[in-house]
Image (cartoon, rainbow, N blue to C red; front, side, top):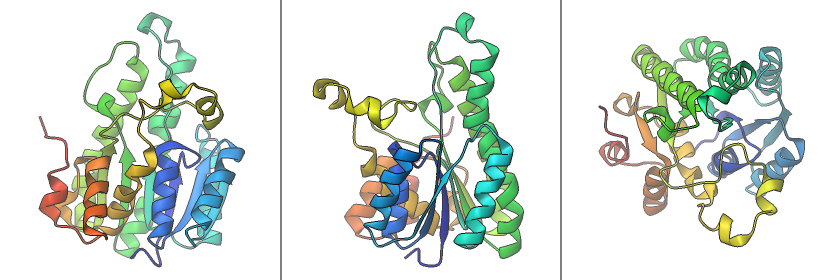
Length: 264
């Protein structure tokens, strides 16, 4: 159902990004895999290719706009025009505010917000020219609630949601869907690598859900274009369950909207 689409997924080496990449590939999209850790990208590439899909591995430092530009250009050169953008990469460095120094602050914003801006700023005019596309920005509960020891992370996610809501209003007239999402169920900490995860005892890791069970939602929003969906933040697990129950991406829009966070 996503044949002919090209998806650009940041943070694709692990977690939600890996789940997104696999399901986008399973439903027929070509997938650009963007992250810093080569070993994790290689694992994801093998998993996407196991679904019979094409995957392009792009080791990228999302704190560097020139590195981002290079990845976007490589994707277009090798896979074609990007039709679905998934800004999933994120860093979470927990610290009390008085210990949150400028380096931590700028690093958090560079990955969680500025990288999303750069990818959107590059692709949005191209999507307008082609007459459509989808932009999916991954937020979290920290995008609308404050948490102690997460001032930089919360600030970056609040800002990402503000960007997304504003852009959604402009993008609807161009057939571009702009959505946000959060897991809906507990997953491993954002910045934990796969190697770190594997070293943890089972009794600790079992408290987290496998992010692969939330991949279908990314495929759905790459497929959907209904403007009634735009500008909302969705529970990934809820939408993925709808896809699994219906065995496909043609879902009732109002059912999907019921998975959205209530606006305050």
